[in-house]
Amino acid sequence: MGQTGHGGAATRDGAGSADAASIAGYIADMSAELAGLAGRSELPMLAYFLNLARVEAEMRARSVASDIARVEAQRLRRGDERMRS
Figure 1 (spheres, helix red, strand yellow):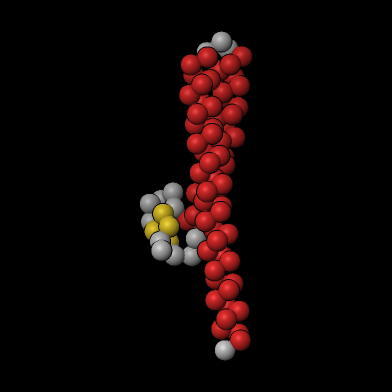
Figure 2 (figure 1 turned 120 degrees about the vertical axis):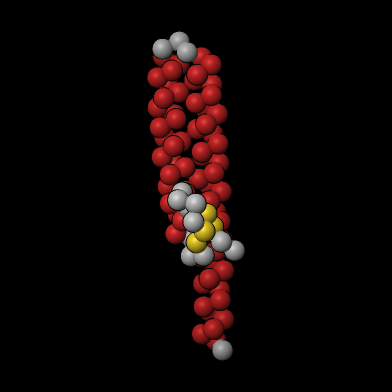
């Protein structure tokens, strides 16, 4: 199962996924800052769309992090099974 990183290259080790989670988290943080700025500047529609971007980025960051944890748990289980053999 390959993962796609921000460069578009598929990776099998999840390194691209870790980058994607980090980037999504950064986008969420920046979107939150910009949404606050837009709200204070009485730009409600812009604030709304920036908050949509924030929520999407937060969901993607959590999803990718969850996928990484699941893959790592599977990797550890396989390692334990090999040690017992």
